[in-house]
Length: 195
Image (cartoon, rainbow, N blue to C red; front, side, top):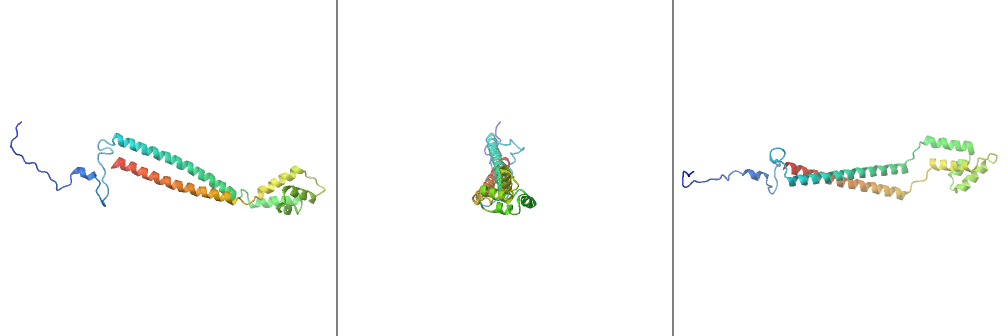
């Protein structure tokens, strides 16, 4: 086929922005991002490299979520341990009932002897001397001391409580950090799939 004219003038319209420039990043402040029509069903979709990157990000997100779950379980265990240390697992009425049984069975001063700071062996012999005509036996007194220690626990170790609280705070900070990592990765996945 032969050309009709020897010289044909080709004109380009540079007044309007070329269509490929819509997806280029512009410096400075910009408006809302426009979606790439070639992704998500309009064209070829994601390239194999983009799919590989997206799968890697999703795998990282799953690993971080598993890590967060294990941290939350550890935090719950520590909170329960702290609660058990600080709060008794029985009612005050149970303590009063135990104290009344001790006074009724062993004598009025038996509770004072148990509350004193003397060693356990001396407590047992002092309570035994309160009622010399009744022989309760050593095993009975050992059970009494065990029950007394259950209903009247010592103050929790302040260093242990502080250590548990410090670990709980550290876990909370780690969880916040991991949540931020998940947000950033999910943002990258969203941008990769849409822009």
